[in-house]
Image (cartoon, rainbow, N blue to C red; front, side, top):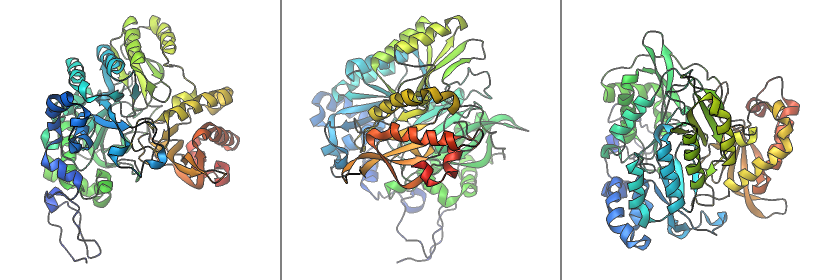
Length: 573
């Protein structure tokens, strides 16, 4: 049954006679009564409170002593997820309950806001990996570092070591404000418009760990850049600030909201508002409070900010932000100019102080504690005490004197980090995959790394003709942690039927996606071709075939993405 109902609070979603009366779980519209199990456990106890129980109860009692609600819920507020039990194939991912899929070990996510690390901090992460995580480490496309095989018994000591050097895992996961992405070259790039580091620090110092923001409808992702390459994938964050020069107010930020991928991808939208640097923290706080107060909580798959923005539109969103949360309007502002260059910062680049930074690629983001401590040692041996992570699973070493650059590049190669990588190594990223993730259906890291090696062998001589990286993003499930819809070739893990009629691990293919920071004219989602799937061990075969066809068919300097959107389906098979 549906009825005509007025909107109870200005800014809320208008309900009509054709809209079901079932509440969305918006706190300022429907009240705070929890409408699902996730909302119940969050209301019962703040997720931040679990830290004390981990240290005083679970670390002493071991895995078996952990309360199930803490284990499958609140542990995330401190960067901890149980990892997948080895030997469970992808066909059983959707059939088993979380406790049947999980091992008695954890993935631990170390929060690195702005991607900024000292070599001392990097060394500590590497040592923790080696001592407590079986020497595992992954660079994420959120500028974090993830460790695996962590036991709850070791968490008090791990936190002690991290916090001793100014690192944390606070709100690295969960329905909270996640890591704030920042330009990896903030404060050093010769061509940056503004250094966003002070704004990122103000946000993290004031609001990370704030219990008034520790119960959001779902995760909240932020990004901020002052670099003309727009290097923080701002179009797919819940809130983003992109540097722009206002004709009257000088340099500040263009405000974006409502971007996210997953199974229902949606690019963010400009609000048309200019944010002065001194108002960034206030505006960020206003946007996240809108999400907390008006975000949809009843259904988890509708609980991201993008769904609220889709219903409200940017005009209403801006009105609510200004009138209910800021108390004063924001000036209208121009859009940021089109991005200049690629945003992964791989290679050797001069800093504004005359020294150099060197960006290097691991293979599909997979590193180790040994590599991280080796990188810390190598950087320090070349006069650097600063390292940055990027939203492209890359690492940067800063502050290198010109006469030390070649030696650093050679040293990076020796530890498995390439400052002059092939286009395929540079352009390929992968999520954690079935090796550790309980949601995954297909292996990712190994398959993607094998594909990189094969493509280097088969197409290496064509790199000058290709000209720029063809991005290949490999994901183990539909959730798009590896951003499959915004890659030249995006591969979504699923079970497929092979030529023999057997169900095997494979990928659905997305083609021609990309973001402004990937040297594109504008951001766009990839297209899918009906029935186009590849087997898990066939990434290189497919990529080689479609890249060769692109080279044969492209017009002038046409990019892969542009070609893929205009090509006939036959050409994309």
